Structures are given as C-alpha cells and as structure tokens.
Length: 343
View 1 (cartoon, rainbow, N blue to C red):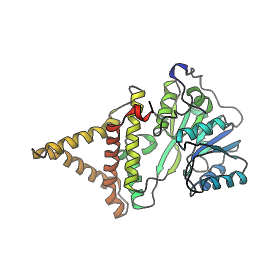
View 2: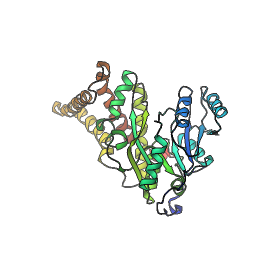
View 3: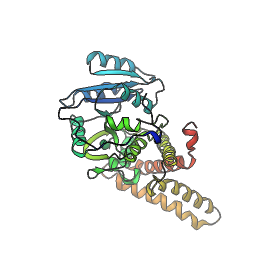
View 4: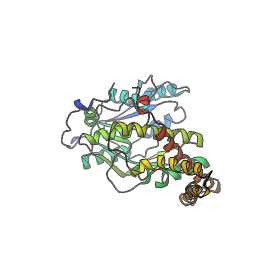
C-alpha cells in the first residue's frame, strides 16, 4: 500500500512536461464509508463526465454499517469501469492509498463519496494540469446546506471569518497555493512523495500537498473547478470536526517546521485570551471587555455573512462561527502530536 516515504529517500522532482499528446487515462479514486444514500449519485456524476479519454473509478470500501457495499457491487455490475478495493481500517488515508495502488491512470482524481462534481470537472482538471505544469490542481469547495444549521455552516465556510482566507473556501484568482480541496494529481507526483501519510486522520490533504511543494512541485488553485460540499448538520458534529482539524493542524506543525502562520494561531490565541480575561474579570470586571468584544464581533460577523438567508439561519450564524473558532482553538491547544501519530 502506498505510504509516506522517509524524507531522506524522496526522489528529486523531474521537470514538468505535458502529460501526453493523446488523452491520458484518468483514475478517479473514492474513499467510501457509510455512503449508501449518496454513492450511486456520486459515481453517476463521475461516469457522466464529458471526458473523452479512458476513465476508471476505484472505490475503496471501508467497513460500512449500512448497505454501502451492496450499492457498490451493483455499480460494478452495471459498468465495467467501476472497480472495488477493500479498506479494512476504514481510515481515509488508507482508503486513498489502496485505491491509488490499484488504479492505472497517469492522472489520479480524488472524489469523495458524497461529492457533487459538474460534467466538465475531469476535463477541466486535466487541461489545467497540462497548461500549468502543476503536480496537483483543485478548485472551490462550494459549501451548500439544506437545513438551517447546514446553511449557517455553509455561510461560515465560505467566509474568511469562519475558516480563514484559503482560496478553496473563499474563492479567488487562479495560481499556486498551499493546498486545494480534493485534487487532481499527476501519478508521478504521488509516487515521488510516497502518497498519503497513513497516520493522518485529518489534514492528510494539506500534509501531502506540503510534501509535493517541498520536493519542488506546484499545487494550483483554479476557480474553474467547483465541487459541492455538504456541511455538518448539527453544532455537535461541527464542533467535533473542527476540534479534530485543530488537533491535526498542530501535528502538521510539529512535523513540518515553519508551516504555522497568524491565521492558524488566531483561534488558540482567542481561546487563551478570552478565557484568561473571563477569569480575571471575576475579580476585576473591566477584563470582561475582552470576551464581550469577541462575542460582539461574532454576532456582527454572523449577521454580515448571512445576509439574504432566512431568519433561523441568520440566528444560527453567530453560534456556528463561535463553534468553529473555539473547537479549532481548543483542539490545537490540547493536541498531543506523538499520541495522535501513534508514536
């Protein structure tokens, strides 16, 4: 199974060159776990791409508790381009590495089991690889919700107030970036860096893209690629998601020096600052101005980012922002990198 190569054995990158004059084979790899509801539609979107070159879909099946496996089997019977590989651990990096190992394409496109990709996604991704010489290209993670909570989360995810200024969240001009959502890779780049690090439960994309860039490759964002993302449907699930993001971002920082910046340090600094001020405020009330100012900023920010939404969504925007900030910050502060990495 493809796994992270030790840093002293990583091969030197080769100069970027056109993929081929003929259409390259594209392998779409999908980590799958408990996707009974969405899997058939997600695979149908891949198979209906306007890509006129060879294409295969490799589903890495984890130990699902619903009828995902039965749906996957029916998909392979209906179309010979769909193949299956087992992922006993159920973990995302293991699934991706297993799917990549069994795939055959010169270009590897990651798609999630509930992602919604437009018909021109693959062709746009491959042409962007060709035009830029990049090792990985990706686009916009277009968060769209249905319920009031999901819509509030989506507004926060599309705003710098919620997740920072990463272009794959907020949009922007095409160009080199630190990381992208999902990704369309040259197989040679994945082989050069040894694939996904199997230890990373979260932030495995960021960590992989860091190694691609660290070995001389380019990661490229283009707003021409848009993937619909479905946010968490409860504040509890959102809190868990962002706590884990914070925990694993500290793991990345411990492994790759110099990768932290003010954007990543802002949430833990807020948690420490507002908590300390609240404690001091018990004996010196002016200190309560600090948590008060944060609360006011979140309320104003929530109103600003949710303009045009229904009343319930607008009321939930501020709690959603606070949940993201506090969960990420608390996760970062309480993270134990060695423990999370199993060392």
